[in-house]
Image (cartoon, rainbow, N blue to C red; front, side, top):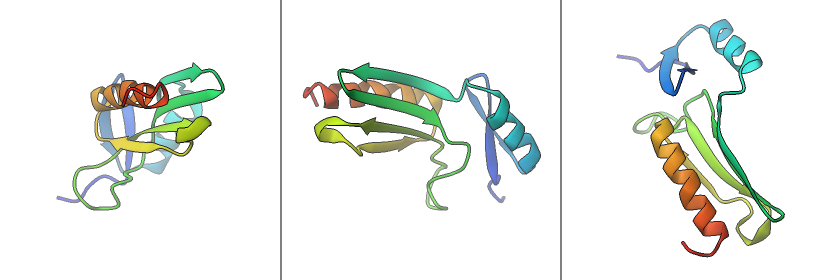
Length: 101
């Protein structure tokens, strides 16, 4: 079975869709694709729902991303399959910024 081209959120659940208009509407009208943003001094940890598979066809779809902006870990990036994994990844990135990881 072919993977969906796009993904949307229904609450915290990922749903695959092939209609770009359905996908675009979700991205234009909803802020709930932000899992978490945390500011630590001048550094920001951001975890968001991407809506497009960033596994590039290898393995399970990677639909969420955590990034660190600023500081010594600027550019740090991790990607995840589920909202729950993304939340855990966000907590891990905070520890990275705080020098605990």
